Image 1: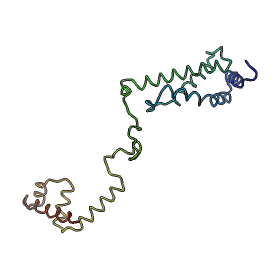
Image 2: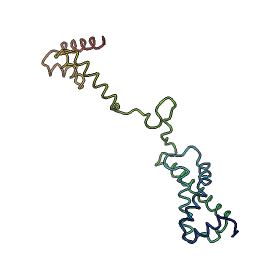
Image 3: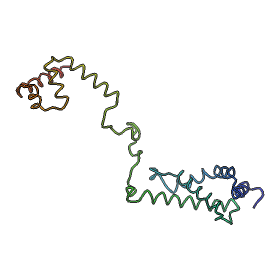
Length: 196
């Protein structure tokens, strides 16, 4: 082991179980391994796992291997890198295979980035909700109350029945009046409201 190689001394300390050395080793290797994993994964997969996950899994495997003494020839920076790069590449392959499994959509599942558009809300927030927002709902309720206040009592009853989803026949039955009377009142309501 070269005396002037700080990584070699870290490796020796990691082999002895020094957690601070393991943290230092992690900090010195993470960004380079992340770059390698990103190049291997590309931009098409970042739904569930990404390059950082690959590096974390690789380093975890490395630490388990060190603890189990599976790397007896690990002494230099070059040996360390060959092990870490190999583990990182294996973990990226695992991620790609996992994401491309048929039960996970065969690699055709699109993430939130598929909804991004410069003119719209970004991500999943840009997808229409089945319900209006609380602000929109309050505005609609206020406008509905204002319009109902402009109607006479008999017209208001018909308008409310329509707003609750009743058919013209059901309204006529409820009010004990003819269907034509209900249709006439609905035409009057539409005329009054269209003037606004």
